[in-house]
Image (cartoon, rainbow, N blue to C red; front, side):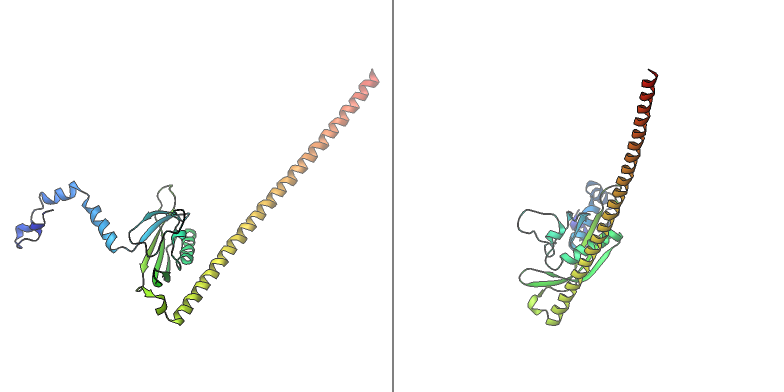
Length: 231
């Protein structure tokens, strides 16, 4: 790319080199990919891509305000990396997106930053298009919804409402887990009931077979007695 020609004296010839220059720029290097990558890096919100188990398969830049590596063994589990204040909403949004196959948005999620600071964000979880028979993937977007604030600057009424919202989200999450556990328990009971019915059926068949064997034994014994009488 010849920058002097692009910032020349304004004459028409400065921008008329489409015959050779543009072909070299596009054919020698994937210019579109370079431009798109730079635009995404500068203007797209921080994001990650996770699979159905919550394991991160792709990181964008600038995710450090929302995800941080915990102490200990390295992990790519997004819930393990999520900063305080984000985990509950993220877990619920991932579960809802996986269940409904629709985009899920959580507004005003308050995330803990470093140095006793917090930030309100918009959290979006969006299922990615199916890729044949590959695993299902989900795009997780983190968009700042307000400035970073010192925790002490957040008014008592806001802290109270945030705490109430956290408790409500936690209660909702607990109820969802309880409902899921109840459904799994009922399914297990049905399976046990079905297995018991199969066992009863097998026992009845075995009993019928034993009765048939007993009858055959009696017939054989009767035949033996008749043969002994003839002899």
